[in-house]
Length: 417
Image 1 (cartoon, rainbow, N blue to C red):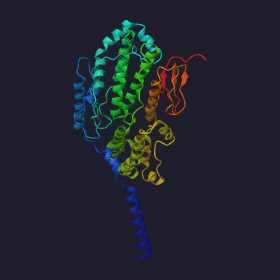
Image 2 (image 1 turned 90 degrees about the horizontal axis):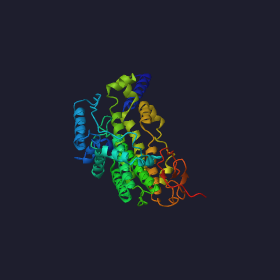
Image 3 (image 1 turned 60 degrees about the vertical axis):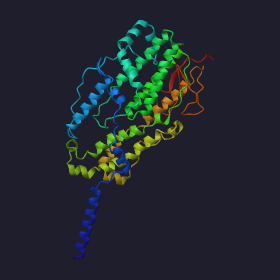
């Protein structure tokens, strides 16, 4: 073989080996594989079914309806391929929910609105008594675990129903308080707070975690509003959130599985190539599923670890980008995966901040009864809350916006200087 032929052959072999290496995906990270492997689903969870069926039609058993919904989803999934569009679940009747007449007790002049017509308040509670009883039964359950596997079509609870039930609980406390039974009213809401905190520590998906954060905030606001109106005495102090209550370990794993499982099957989904206008081999050349998932894993792990940080330590992480910066080489080998990873990874700092904002509200709550709250700002130790005339509340400052006033608590106006 002549020299030029050997050079040409060597060049072809090198280019071929490079193309082969470029084509190949990498192995899944062991931690990514561990998270993606379907975990052992608990044998049962009464609380899961009760929550799923919370909005069942009046007169029906929420537990039974929740089980039926879960079973119907499993049946539909078993009858369809992994890339088939799932048929919509039958949207049947639901229990009647309170409308605009049921405001959030701790917001604006809601307390005065509900208080001024005692008969209307009693009628409201009577009309929606079944929903309130379901809510009480639900919070008393202590075995919550999400039984469905993470997927775009997994059955979800109607969280609007949960929100309205929580508002009814506050209205029930108000009714007791205006009847001169302030201690009972306070006990009702303090029990609600205790049970919601138990649920918060067990919540294993992000939506439920954030809903529980909101409901806890509403309960604390309701107690503060009743105390400001002179209807209940100063409540017992609340401890800061525990590590389990703050933890997003399980929710982040579910979010990772939800996104990662879709990315791993993207190439084999016939709809993908059609939508992108590319053939399967072209997509494989530009997209490496394992590499994409491996590159996303550190971001989800960082959020999970960040949820265990104390507030002051969390503030120091806010300048960190949501995504780990990829090398030019990895972006060149996996251009589609790099783009999809950027799109699929939201900024979870806002969810972490809600947990720390709730901690700030708990600090204020523990100072109720003082003319001016003496609590330290968890975000900025040594700093006190400032009076917000618009909200008629004391508020802590924080690193992110707080449009919903989570870092605020209703309070009697400060003494005139």
